[in-house]
Image (cartoon, rainbow, N blue to C red; front, side, top):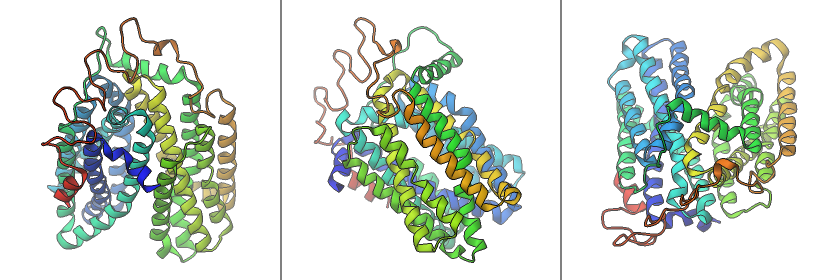
Length: 452
């Protein structure tokens, strides 16, 4: 199972990107605790909410633009640009922006959120270029697993750096991880998409929305995610620490978060080796494992039982995320993939803050059990109903291409290189093969070792 997960590292370009993103993901975890420390040490606690809100609002507002740019630019360059933008925002915080007017901190947070909105669609759309089709699921599983491990390592390292050198040191460390990511992206040899005509940004964004709407299975899953984040996942996230504190068990909160991350790692390992006959059914049902956690919270079950449910929740999140992301990458034409990824991200994040904000008030107004039982009911409904939408059970694998997917005469299809253009795993003359790293391309071990 582990060897299956690591198999995508055979491909030099993927290995290079993976190493840079592994380091950058640890930096993201460091930033999470460093930003909170910087704001809370200098400002009122409510200002932290404003800063985080500015980040999230910018991500939502810029997401469609990020998808357009991901389909216009070389995706590796779009990712590097995003890293540079976010590094500037982090450096601004490291230089003491939180000590000045609040508007300055909000602007930097919005800058970081905008960078994320550019990065995520480009990264998702670049992955099919880095590995052959048979390793695409494993590549996504490895990315997910690495990110979950970083969520555990990063905050712990951030706390250590803050103890040793203060928030300034932790923020500088995060900025340095962006530099590592940029360095690994510079060596990627992807090409910009060919554009026909002079379509505007708005027109290209509409094309992305149309591509989603033309595929009922994609539309259904995005709507499912929106509803679940608002009524199910939002309450689960925000009520967990509140209920643990009310029971005098807040000391176990960190353990519960860690167990969920452990479940995510296990899910990534499992889905890397598992090829379900109906990936949509498997992915949608995997998300329903969150119902175990909700039931534990509603019934006040013992911590060991809740811990097991947290593992199941993390497992389900990873299984769904890998199967869903891989299916999008295989089903959406390359020239539209960045924009479809951005629409998916918009649907994911747009209402998430609303669910987080309303859950505590709903508990005060309606009571704990009604809110949690409602969340379970919504989870069941949003698990069952999408399975009756055309294409959902197979995540589009059984769907014929839409007219927009058909290449014109003489034009290569999505994922097929044009004449004279090497594929991700077919080197051009003088270029090393997938199993032979070039002289100027460090291996994963060398890259990681150089920044540890």
